[in-house]
Length: 255
Image (tube, rainbow, N blue to C red; front, side):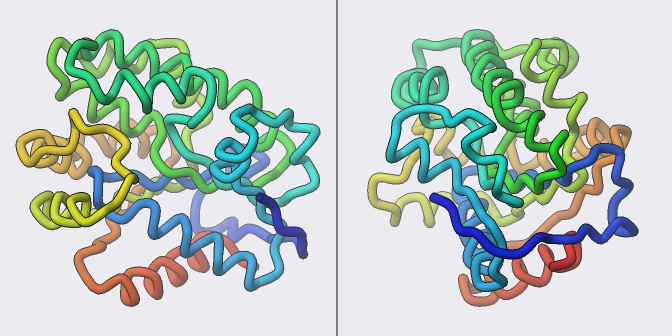
């Protein structure tokens, strides 16, 4: 769950640093390679002898949240949304697997899961100067819950408590993993036991989501809050994607 090592210094010239810590979110349609990017970063940082704590592993092992006190000695925290415990577990195992839940209900569930994650861990970590690398976030809600049947408007989503809180702690960098939705769905079909949300994993939804992720209106929400938005193609081979992912990370943080 955690690996200890040396500290990291930030490349301040890359992104305006308004908070004490440094926050990077990776997002994109299902099957776009977000997990590959995060796992590559984790391996790369461990090889560089950095102190890494993987919340995804902790949640899987303990079925619980750590306190910030338990992880404060680490320099880098790897996270994901939805979480896989508490509200996040209900989202993954029930809400996103059934068409019975409206976009409004789904949005409120994600907002609550997000608020718990931020208040319990992410905000204390950023205030303590940690680096957070996260798969998905409020970025996903501002795409998926607009497209979902009976969803909310973007303004309504922004004003849900957990989303509003997350946007007040907007990431310094947002990486959009970009791949043709047809390829993303082919990748999902090859997975075994790793599908997170069946109701989102169809071509019609993926095409709409891709369009939203790449839209100027979506990017503007974050650039206005000081976030640097980068589009990262994952259409190449896995080896190529991992190599460029390492290069991307090294351009954002200096080890």
